[in-house]
Length: 131
Image 1 (cartoon, helix red, strand yellow):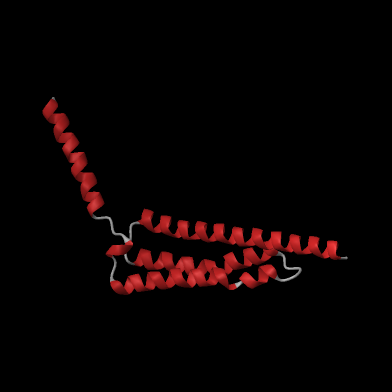
Image 2: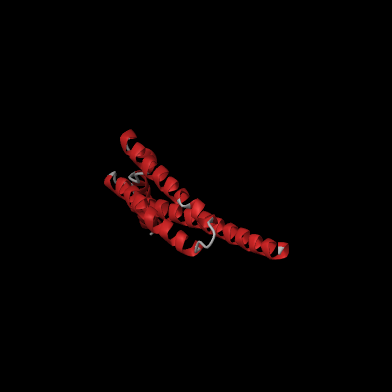
């Protein structure tokens, strides 16, 4: 009985080790694919910074600017996902990487929006006090 349990346990362990050894990460892809991956990431980050000045323009609807920015930049995440998928990067790693990029950018964008709104409110309050 103990031998059967040990045999089953070792089979399960060896299967999980084999599955992990076949796990392809972004570090395992070719240099050219890594360059494409980093290019998509850089393009996404640049895109997220593109509309920053619009947040501070008088009368700008910061929520609309943020929405426009997120929509405009989404194709860069699609490109990242495609590069990783084409190079057989593990689906879980690939999806998690794209999800984290989107989440971090949205958090930074929300911070910028809140700072802009606070700045506009402070400027309006100062203008009223000055009058």
